[in-house]
Amino acid sequence: MKPRGKARPAPSNRAHTPRRIAEMLRVDHAGEYGAVAIYRGQQAVFGQSAMTAPMAEQLSEMEAEEQKHLDAFDAMLVERGVRPTAMAPLWNAAGYGLGVVTALMGRKAAHACTEAVETVIEQHYAEQADAVEHEEPQLAATFREFREDELHHKDVAVEGGAREAPGYRLLSRIIRTGCHAAIRVTEKV
Image (cartoon, rainbow, N blue to C red; front, side, top):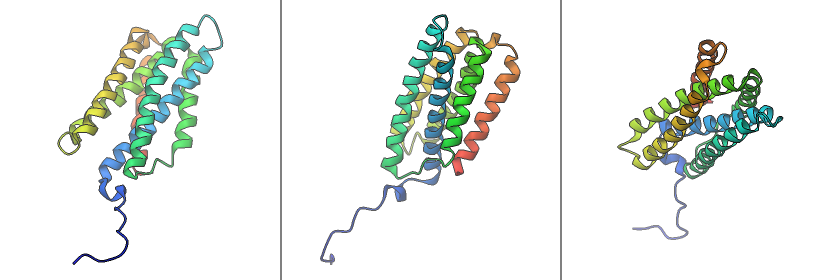
């Protein structure tokens, strides 16, 4: 027999979001947050001169795509009751700082930064899409769609001379290592 009275509220979406999916969404949200910060830092430098204005415009277009991703993850976190990372203020400062520093190093170094970050992120999205394909096909499709944008950013960076940046190998290794570390921390914190 059904109890009388008010209907029980629907259970929280949080109860229906498996921990590993919550970790994926938290990491992706933080990654997009950091990407927007990197592009803003780079634009702050390149936007200062008419000579570098075309670079600032290119970065603005890539930032807009990252912002679209960030907005989508903002909505997913709310819908699924997933908390964002507590590291967001640090990732914002680190991303902006990385953007400024690589832009100050020059156009090719800024592209090297983009290439390194996007290499890690596009691989991360591919792994996530494969991992959730059967249980969450719509989420897998979102990961694949965003991966395509990241691959485009990576291609733009390579075409812009990323691999010709002074100290490219070291710079790329440092940035990739930082991205991998940020992913691991963000999954839990």
